Image (cartoon, rainbow, N blue to C red; front, side):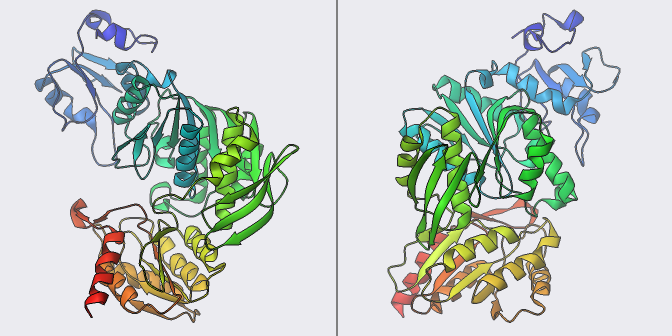
Length: 482
């Protein structure tokens, strides 16, 4: 592709470089590229791509996009290379975002459940759809691995290109605060932007809840219509501040989409879905009041996309759950093991409260906190678990470059004044074995924090295979031997 074609419509003049053939685009100095590529200099937290411009020319770069004069014959200066790069990636892949209808979901908790159930519902209603999310990416029935919630720009538009080429009508996307703040979505325009809730998370990145709030708010500058959770105080604030049409949903009060006659149980939720004059009975196989909210978000999306409440409810009632979200792990015993991704204080409270509804025995919570992440939430995690469970097993999560025992020490600081008994077992695998070995009849053991993840992250970014379902099966096999 000629450079003039690649940057068409971006307000740039390629000058003498206009007819140059471009073989690829990148901002990654480590990536091997064919001679003739375009390199975009982006300044990060620890490395500034501008310092590598000449080295990239030596590796075959034909044009360098930069923010200031580097004294290079092949340079083109743009005001913000981080914002520019996603637009360049989109153009390189033929602007696939224009060929699909995009729905973005943001918030602290609930994104994965909403996007997964919405995608399954649209597929069942005859609309081939793609999913971009925390657990995995999907194109129709094909599953692709993912390393982050919102992909880096090149990966995002490469994925959107494949989705468009495979005739996806819709793309449902989890849009993270970091992805929004780093402008990864570039020229993407969302037909719907959904807000779930905002609770303490990612303060290691954003610093304050206000910064976190403002980062999430960016979604509503790139979408046509908002769907807002009226039950969340930050959602109420968004309604006053955003400048696009907004619809609301609520599990507690009248809204555009709301619930009446809510019944909570350990196996799921039942409620009457109200939309205008329509009322329909919902039986959703995921427990907790927060899943009433998640279900309403899905129903609200389907309504905005033109589906009737009746057909939307039929799809929701047929759902069997989402991997790693209050997922029951088979044991064949007289106790239950549930695997959930809850890794914030609010999420831990929500899932434990949901499970306690209808629980006949003790609810035991096994959890830890990730290393190199917001340390201030660690004592809050302990308090949330202590207030909503009968016993705690405090262990490691993804320690990364931190000492897992020091993380546990910080967690335990939150137990002052709490009487809930606990044990600390640093090794998470051994902690799961201990939980299974000491399970009593009718116990419900909640493995919180890992959810869908089948790995653990250790020092220096090392990943080891760690699937809690497999570990539970190994622990059960050990019981059988004894």
